[in-house]
Image: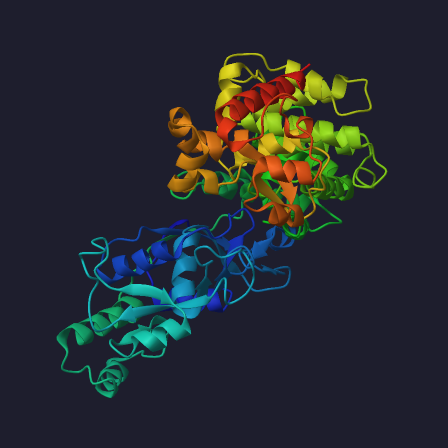
Length: 579
């Protein structure tokens, strides 16, 4: 068979091949990753006759390859998080086809722009599968005007992904052309008829733009491609790795999906991993989001000595181990994130996902996936896990390259003889300059200046108030001495000695952990702006429960002494956690 560059084809011909399933994607391809801006830029490049690089296809005719390797259809209706995966296709009894080895992102972008849609989350909206949060958009081209260079000097042609409502509103002032309609305008007569119907025939920019789009899609052979016709899958895999070394980084998990799918005989690896991601997403507010990389890294830590993302660690033997233990692995991961939610964490406060892996290891090898979230499970063990997680987060133990960290922690978990989570043993293993659990006064004082509603504030308060129900959505961070004392200049000058004004006005003092507590919503609302001394007396709140010495005043005039004393007591408490 002759490998080499073939006669180039038009974009319309390529899109038809995608639509007719003559082009498919091998499962070794990563998911579609381009943003809507990248797609718009691609179409602008095509209109300006800029090169869009060559493509590489693999002619698949061998029946064994069709049977033993998974292939997928192209994505046409992208929906952030909820519809990012390509549908698979049974190729065991289909005609020969061409698999895309290099150019998936560009070809998918062309297909979405010309036949599909692109939906992404609006700013400040939850990742929720509704049109209100993630509206469906289609690609439009402004035929009235080019891009305003004052606001965007990268593009010339004004391509935009718009909702139907946005397009309808914008049509009142300008002519916005739905790009997919160019597929039906397949000769110049139809182009001219369209321009006449829209009263654009005398507008040089409109005519030139639409005719250029027609030529670039229907007439000019812009898809230049190399065809690999040898039926040697190992060689194609090598080519794939080399050709995908640049551009949008290829995650190793995507590369391994084909290997996993081929070697898992009883389970569809891709579907199972997607199902696990979806189930974890149901946990937490905001929901926990994990990746395929995270799942495969967890499998390596559980079962393989070398946990690096290297091809040699994903042998058929190892992958079969993953499959044979998959149900328990899946349940252990779900149990871990369910535990994290019960301990008060969510996707925002769970700072490093890899910190979950030692907990999953502990759950798996102690057969706790069905026990750890039961009401009767040892609360001290759960609190030890929460404490270790928080200390790991505040000390950035999982920052940067973490393979060595995970390997060290796995060794501790293997060697421990205790049936409880080995918090102290784990922390004692890290005592170097870059990674350690040391809590000195300088570090702790900085931590106590963490501002209200920050992750750091949550971490410290979570350690201080361990007995609260963290599944209660009504837990609030509350100022001990009310906020109004410090933002209302009149109150501040009336209630606080002049020498302490600068101290009291500093947010590091009044709006930090030093002046915060956790309360359930009802108690917080009842407290409101009530002076601390009055509120504590009314509700019989002891100084000790607020980490205040018995002889320290709760009066607002003594605010400076109050903060200094509370910091001292909190620091002592946190240091005692390390003993």
